[in-house]
Image (tube, rainbow over all chains, first blue to last red):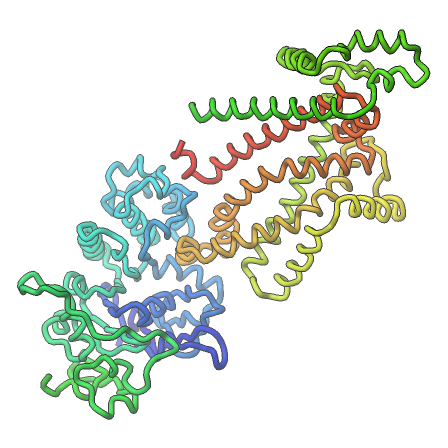
Length: 323
Length: 306
C-alpha cells in the first residue's frame, strides 16, 4: 500500500494549559490521496479550521497545544518537524487559501511581489515577472501585466481571491488547503472560484482539502466528505453517497438546511439549537441535545465512529433505525 | 493639487500665528529694550536714538505691520545685541541642531524597532515584561535630570565624552543619546502594541503559510504595517523633541538653535527670539511634510486616496 499524501491520525488540539485547556479538535483522523478532493464540512466552531491549520502547524502556539496524534505528509509527521523543514513544507508541499482574501493579502506589497515571494521561497529558478504573469493568467485575472503591479486594495474581492490562488499555486504544492475560500464572496463569484479551483485541479493534479460550512458546494468538486461536529468527525463518505443518503442525523439536518429550488418553502430549515462551543461540549454524543432521533443512552457515552460500509463511517449507533 | 494648496495655506497661517503670538508676548514683557541694549548708564539721548532707530515709540499694531512687511521680504531682522543678521545666526547654528535631532531619531528608532518587534513576538515572556518596566522608566524620566546625570557620570566622572564642548559631530553622541533615551521607551511600546495587532492578522498567517522565514514575517510582512501609525505619531512628536533639543543643547553647550534661543531670551533680544521661534515653527511644519510623504510611501492605500 502506498503512503497517502495526507494522513491525520487521532489529532487532538487544545487551547491553553492545565485545567483551563479547551479541546477544540478531539481525535480527528483523515486520509487524502494524491489528486483527490476531500471536503471537510461543519458549522463554525466545529474544529474544521483548526484541523486545516494544523496540517502545516500554522496555529499560534501558545495558545494552541498539539495534545496528541499525528499529521503525516507522505509519511513525515508535521507535528515534530524542525523549523527549517516546516518552512520548506509550508507553501512547497501544502499551500493555503483563506476565507478573506482582502485581509490575507498584505496591504502594503504589490500583488505580483507577493506571488514572486512564494516563487523565490520554493522555486527560485522561476521567480521571474514572466512566471508571475503566467500564474495570474492561469487563475483568470485579466490584464495580468498591469495587475501584477496593483496593490491588493485595487482589486475586487473575486480578483483578490484569484490572486491568493495564484500565490498558493506558484510553488507547485501537492496539496491545496482551501479554508472557506468563498465565504466572503458574492454568490456568483463563489461559483466562479469553485469552478476555477476544479479546473486548476484537473490541469495541475494537486489534491485539495476544501473546508466549508456549505454542503451545497460539496457535490461540485469533492470526492470524499468528512463532516465535523464539536471537534469530532461524525460521518465520512464518498461525496455522491453522502448527498444522496446521509446517515448521521447531523449530516441529514445539514443537508436539509440547504435551500432547494424545487420545493415551495417559506422558511429556511434550520437545525434547532446552537452548535456548542469548545469547552462546553455536552457529555455523551455531542449532537444529542439537538438530535431528532436521540435515545436515553445518547447522553451517556460518546459513540464510536463505526464503519458501516466500505468507505463509509458514521458516529451514531442508530444510523440504521428508520427516522 | 488642491490638497497641496490647502496644506500650503495652512502652513503659512500657522507661521503667521506663531509670528503674531511671539511678537505680542514679547511686547507684554515689562522693561525697555533700549535700556537693555545701551546699558543702565546710557544717556537719555542715546535711549531716544535707539527708540527712533528701532521704531520703539510707534504704536504696537504699526510695529507688527512693519515686522510682517519685513518677514514678507524674507528678512528676519538684525540682533539688537550683536547687530548680526538673525537669519545668518540661525543658519550658522542649523547644522548642529539638525545633526543632533537626526542622530537622536535614528538612535531611538534603531533601538525601539527591534525591541518593539521582539517583545511583540514573545509577548508575555520575562523579556517582554522586563522591557515594559525599562520602557516605563525611560518615558517617565525628566529630560533636565537625565541630561545632567549622563553629563556628570559619563562625561565628567568617566571622561568618555566631552562635558560641554563641541569640536566634531562625534561629540553629538551623548546629547543625542540623552534625547533618544527619553523617547525610546515610548516608541518601543508603541511599536510593540501595533506589532501585536498586526501579528494576529490573516496576512501574517498567510505569509507563514507561504513558508516565509520568521525574520521575514516579522520585519518584512508585519513591521511595515505596524509602522504606519508609528510614523504619524513620530510626526507629531517632532515638535516635542525640539523642546528637548533646546534643553539638551544648553546642558551640553552645543552651538545649535536651542542655545541661540536661550541666549537671546537672557539678552532680551526680540528679533533673535522671534527669529528662532519662527524658524523652529517652520522646521516642525517642514518635518511634518516629510512625514506625510513617508506615510504615503509606507502605506500605498494613502496614495490612491489623493
